[in-house]
Image (cartoon, rainbow, N blue to C red):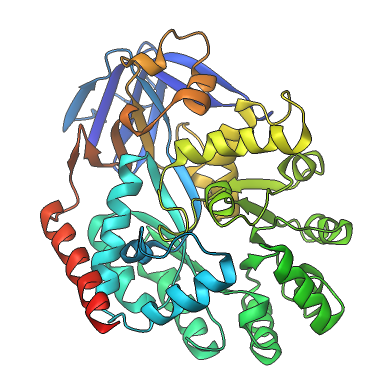
Length: 435
């Protein structure tokens, strides 16, 4: 579709991780942005023999167009465990609640559960996610059918999936759609045997691909890894050659100096998950230190069983708030850096360089923010408003790949929300009957 936004404020990303607000028009042609400006300099876009026929012209009425949020760590089908497995430490949470109930899932369940998560992403202005979960053959169809952009990675461990499945998915999903991509990964050092880890390293080297995993999430995880191997999870997995082509870690709360050196050496990214790490009492990621070291940072919600909310506004506030507490410095982690992490930083971590910002030639993954709400007034500083006072209530429209998938409370994903809610409750009802 060809869509023209006018009377808009437009958030432009600068190279120094700051932002500026322009006023004017943004044009979408097919799946990409073809013009941003005041409407007087369009000759390079519209030649005499190339007139754009608009499918829609949207009066933004002074509201803000911004890059879509990149949710850089998710387990989307875990929506069925929202508010079901709570108030436990991580290891007990996994062993007593998560793994036993995941074993009861049917493959087709993950399709409906993933759509439920996608709907929540859209209401939060999230236009892409970095998803790790089991039974990907089923829930990948949820992304294709709804038109949502996703990057998959493997949740390979000693109990589910295999190296063969990982390689098959890598080859298949990277060719499946412009909206889907795949990178190698594994669940964590503590759930994955050394032979499997060595196999992942071989696959990554074969395809020159990055590798992603949960890394140093809890103090216990690090201590037990050091007892096994004499090294931290970061150091042990690096010793197996897993990061020769980059990649990154989710959480990275309990890092040592050598771990940070490894991140820098391999140009890796870190995805912080403050909501999940707070709820599970895992600790606070040292984002200020990582930022000072020049390491690319992104933000994830983690799964809806461990958070339980898939809300990037809440995550942004927690990133800056927890950093300030950790460092005892109210000036650390300014709003601009946090918003950059939630947009461009996530795009780079996920291998989506065409989705990092609003600019001509970039993918049309964007959000319209309603500024005509009390929490966004006055407009002293729109970036700070987004990070410190913004919320889901401000998301008027979410566009992915040039298609509006959510607008003014309505989902445009080809599925009736009531059907999704019914399916999700049927699935968890079946789980309860099995207990």
